[in-house]
Image (tube, rainbow, N blue to C red; front, top):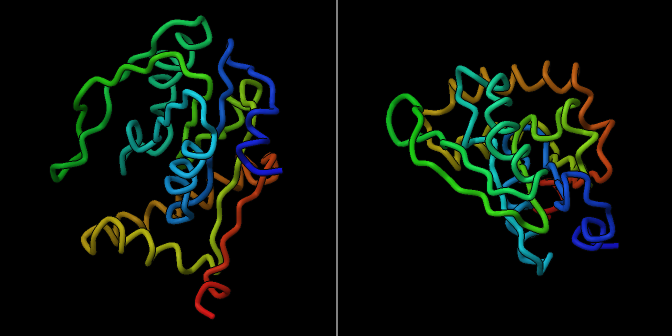
Length: 185
């Protein structure tokens, strides 16, 4: 069964919306997987990245903004709304407002998207990872620029502790693992 088929076969648990979390460490392909899934689903799908909420200084405590602005309204069949982080300057700050119309599928992708507190609402929890894990830093820096290396070093140390405590991988319904060693052959 494809990932899209698994999503569509899963029950809606956020009102009439199927909520999919794509979680995993930085550099593991979560955003790419979300974009691919949107294309494959063929139904009204909205992606909300955790990067729209989190900052280097606030990796996870922003969660109530997502719940209050998006998850609670969508569960009631109402449009959600949140203020996304603007990463264009030297320090992330609140930027534009984003409206979230009620979709068939809502994908929340990013670190902590599948956290323990949201799992009862999830239709599917997907864990994305790459091996070797040491490649994640280089993938992240290549994507976001050399000046982000110190931030990613701190972030990846944080992630390791977060995932150990939250036990996200063990709770996943689907594990999408990409082996970079296989791709180089």
